[in-house]
Length: 445
Image (cartoon, rainbow, N blue to C red; front, side):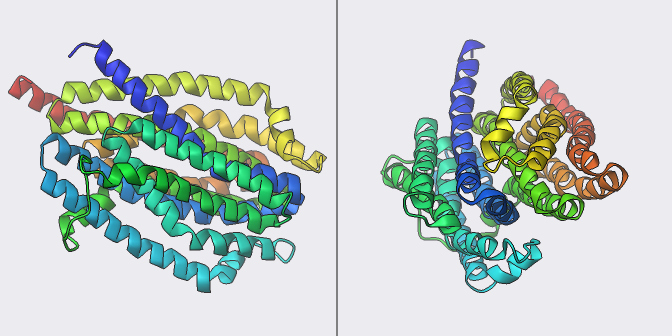
């Protein structure tokens, strides 16, 4: 195979996936913008307190979608259509189970959850409303994530991208209509977010239901091997989203103590911009995944390495551009969300942007590397990296540095964590690649 063809193929998958993931991240970013404009600092604080629930829902959808689609690509490369169909069906079973769980939490536990997330009397009702409606729409978010992954891995990256962009644009339009002309407040914001993935599902269903699709639901029970594939291979994707939610919960608690609701609102600006930045890296990684998994299924390790290398180069180029833009334009970026022209919010968020996003290269490296491990069925190192990033390092780092340097310590906790994990990830990559190179030399492939 020529060098040009894999590069074109990677460029196609990665660019479409990046656009799709940016569109998904804009679900919450649009809420942030319109809530800031319509409801001010308190609305922005309430939204930021509730967003971790979205991370858990979206993480579950990505876990099932990425775990199932990764194994599906391997089955497809080996022409094992029976296993591919059974895997897809089991993925839908798991989606139904998780959806029921989230909906029950929304119906009966949204108020205790709002208290747990730190909502005070000023923002409690708005936080509770956002949580309850968001959790009730969890089936749409989860099914949308699953179809996006399977359709993309079934040769439909353009349809996957189109569905996410259409959903995001719908969310932006409905956000404006529900918050301003209709005066529905925070309920309008979350209703727009919940309705949007439904459009994506409707756009992808014709592909999923056509006879030529590579996957279809079949009569089968829950199978341990398929459940294991979904959960183990998709677990790093879940951890990536859950860790974002955990980090937000921890940071919110620390910032509430340091600077109150204004600080939480400032962090909300940074956290939501971070959603977009991380979505770019996730898009590169997800664009790489079907190509690496296919090469791995065909036992073409050289080709798998090539796609991984392309992803890392794209990540490095974009990281430089992202930080340059955020550093040079920190003031106008923050002002977009500072509808009340709060000097305190402006100062906190500007300083935070410049420190927090020194992490971009390390975040991109860890995201791509974790997905590469998942794509070649090396779930353990991917899980190790995700656990370190989301729980083991970031939480003590945040408490320690904030105690030493206040808000500056809060902002530096994230880049230092990602740097330490990136160094470990480089060591894991060397360790796990050595046996493959030896095997490649023995087989002469």
